[in-house]
Each structure stands twice: as structure tokens, then as C-alpha cells.
Amino acid sequence: MPQPVLDGAQVLVALLTERPVSLYAAAVLRIGYGLLYLVFLLREFPHRHDMWGPDAPWTPALARQMFDQSGWVSLLTLSDSHMYFEVCYALALVTCALFLLGWRTRAVSVLFAVVVVSFHARAIYMADGGDNLMVLMAVYLIFTACGRRWSLDARRTRLQASAGRTAVPRSSDLRHHLGDARGILTTVLHNCGMFVIAAQVCFLYGCAGLYKVQGAKWGDGTALHYVLNIDLFRPWPELSQLIAGHHVLIAVVAYLTVLVQVAFPFTLFSRMKYPVLLLLFGMHVNIALLMGLPLFSGAMIVADAVFLPDRFYRTLGRLGRRTFQRTGGMGAEALVGTTPAVVPPQPSLNLTEVGPAVRFPSHMGR
Image (cartoon, rainbow, N blue to C red; front, side, top):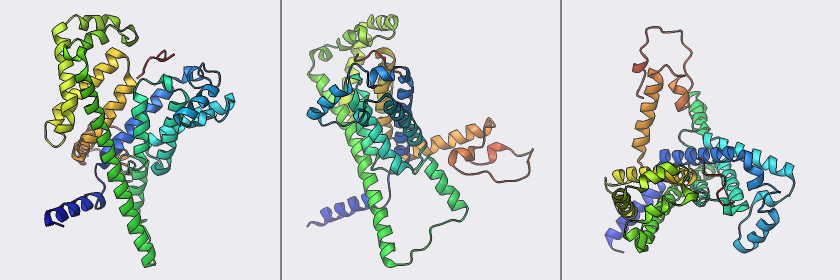
């Protein structure tokens, strides 16, 4: 094979196997989706029986009939007992909280994916678009090392290291090789998982932009005008009506939306991606506020976090620790997973020198 091809293959192998990339971004995805689905389930708690319960209009029998055609599965349809449903709902809340906190992330990430798939499949017509992305991301995160940063697992590892409880040297070459193989496999799965997540977001934006280009309403700049006048997507009718009156503004925003979505995959390897991400963030915030689709917008905003480098999140963490230190918060060490040293009080210590530091409408789909 030509030498450039061999060199490129070596670089690719090294990139996949040497170290896990974007660990902070993976942690943000874990925290974001765990928090988002936890808030979603808590928000719909009063309506849970109407949406997913045994007496819901979309009955378990109807759901099982659809499973025969779609191939979906759901733990919620294994029994028509009300007690079983309540137990499943409680366990779903606990699973989301544990996934958010990063406790035993490897196992809990699988349970989180099962929870998201089960609730999505049980009442598939209740989704607002965000559920589809949530299902994909929950499955992808199983393969990532999303618990190595900003998690209880990371805190436990640091505490064990600070206490001197390091791993016992392996007694045989076989165990040594198995351990190395496990580390390489974990790294490869994580890197591939993060790549698939990034590719999924790129395909989503690219396809959305190209579909808009084919639409006549987007071509003449009137698409957003019609969106702002649909009663189903107007949580704030007065605000929507006010914005819809600015015809030039909504036409410019429509063209800018198409341009940003189509251009996004081509800006990833340049600094242009940062202003594009900022524009996409503003777009999703407006969708959440003006169209009443916070779950969809939140899922997209969290997905966009995969494109921010780890140095951004490290800087963000240092700023957060400095803020806690300056305001006298309960120990910045607790934020990073360490325990404060037991020392006598130091009244003259300057803490700034210690170190660097949606609801979507419940009537939707009913």
C-alpha cells in the first residue's frame, strides 16, 4: 500500500485506541439528557395515567398491536396492573436521577436507555419530536465513557486514588493482557460512540436544511409566518402575533435558518462552527418559547454540546469553582469530587487564592 495511506491508517488507529476523546462533552450529554428526561417525567407526573397508564386512551392492547408492526418493545406493556405501572414510573425516576448523577454509569446507562425506549414506545403519538432524538442518544451513550467526568463514579475514583487504594498489580501476564484489551476496547467504543453522536447531529441538521430548501414556503420566506399562526404551537398567542407582524424579520430568520442548517456540517473543522452553534442555540430557544416544544429544543441543545472541545468545559468548570469560592459556597472540592482536608480554621485565608478554578404541552398528541 502507498505510504501516505499507511500513515493515515496509523493515525486513525492511534486516534481510536490511544485515549478517549471528548470526555467532558460525553458528561454533558449524560447530565443533559438525564436531567431533561427526569424533568419531563416529573412534569407529566399528574398526567401519567392518561399518557402511559393501563387506562390511557392508547391502551396497552393497542400498543402491543403496534409493536407487532413497528418492532418496538416496552416494559410498561408487560402487565396491565396499576401497581406495576406505578412501580415502573418510580423506578424510571430513580434511573434518570442516577444517570444524571453518574452512579455506576455503565449499568445505569443501559437502564436509562430501556426507560426512554419503553416510555417512547408505550405512547409513541405523545412525542413532539424530541423523543426520537432522546431514544437515539440514550442508546449511543451506552457505548461511551460518559461517567468519567462530573459524576459520582469519577468522585469515587478520585477518593480511592487520594486514599492510596490503587489497583493491585496483576499476578499473571494473561490478566495483564486482558486488562489492556479491556482498556483499548472501552476507548474504541467510546470514541466510535462520540463520532456516531456527532454524525447523527450533522445528518439531522443537513437533512432538515435540505428538506426546507425544497419547500416553497421556505423559498419565499413565509414559512415562519404560517408557523406562528398555528394555534397548536402558540403558547403565547400575543407574542406570536406580535412577531408575525414583522414580515421582513421573519423572512430573514427563515432564510438564515435554512442557511445555518445546511452549512453546519461544513463548519465543524473551522472556527465558524462557534457562531453557527450560537445561532442554533438561539433558534432552539425560540422554538421552545414560541412553539411550546421545550423537550425537542432541549434535546437539540444538549446534542449540540458534543461539538464543544474539552478545554471549553474545563474553563467552565474552573469559572464555576471560582464563583463558589468567592460566594462562600459549600466547598468547591465537593463539585470536583474531592473531600476537604481536616485543618483548623483559617480566618485570614483568601479563598480566591485556593485554586483556579420544558415543559411541552400535555395536550400534544391527545
